[in-house]
Length: 200
Image (cartoon, rainbow, N blue to C red):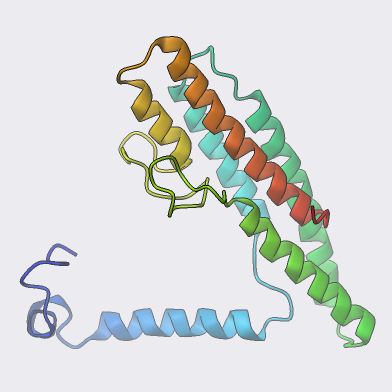
């Protein structure tokens, strides 16, 4: 909102202009509360990796239209398709798990293993070293790129594209972009391995 972190960002401004009856605050609290309840009470985490895979495909297509033809997206494409396949397998397993009404030890262990796989898949998208120049940002699919108008996903790739417009020779610029594509590819492969239960 436009006054955020300005001198006008005060309780009085909010009470008079921003949200006079604090209805938006109540609505946001209700949404976060429902989300917390759902995450706490569902026996299996409500993660949907099929939609994640579809978004990754859209991102890859948009990225493809922006890149030099000398840069290969084949490894990324392959890893995304493998991720989509693993997401489909997990989705089928989730449907079966949700149909199981019994709560015996075997079913509980299957649910626990599935939750571990779902959590580790998201962690697979993290890079321990972080983004170049912004090490505190670890996620390779979502994060703040330097130029959000150009690309608002794959922040490492977006930043390498921004860096490529300055300074170094063309071969080095293309190598930098390709390196970032490989980093994202490996992250997608890690997430795929986690979804398949290959905890490596």
